[in-house]
Image 1 (cartoon, rainbow, N blue to C red):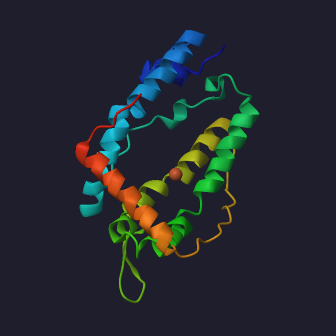
Image 2 (image 1 turned 45 degrees about the vertical axis):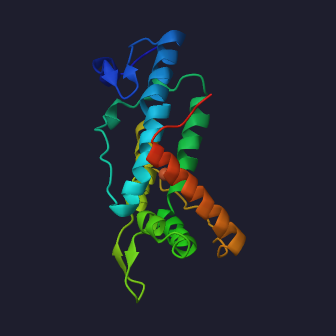
Length: 199
Ligand SMILES: [Fe+2]
């Protein structure tokens, strides 16, 4: 299998060691590295424990630096490259209407969980003008451009995503509110305990 010069020059990346000619075991080691680095119980518990702090004082996480130019089609392993690229394009379309997602979430959340509403969609004045952008929205609005950049790097052509159409949610009913309150109470309790029991 061919590798790009850029990839060959990059021994360590976000998925651990990047072997110039990856075998099945190299690829499996990289997948394990990703799962342990970003999806382990400790990492997910830390994110959950951070939620109450986010509600009190919203703060954005910084992204690690990323070498976009090192992305190449020969790194697509075990899946048809065309299928992979079409999934990247679909993901960009799903991520495109973030402003609308935030707006709909605000309409739904502001009465049942004002702090969560601020975290997701920001702060508004009485006339409905936005005074502060939500941390969730700030984070999410970086995703569509990221998928477009991956697409452009793989295909060599620009992608202009057609934003998904979205059906607004109807206002929460009393029963749903109680359920969401219980869910948040459970999440906050778990955050306070800062540990899950797995297995
Ligand atoms: Fe996203």
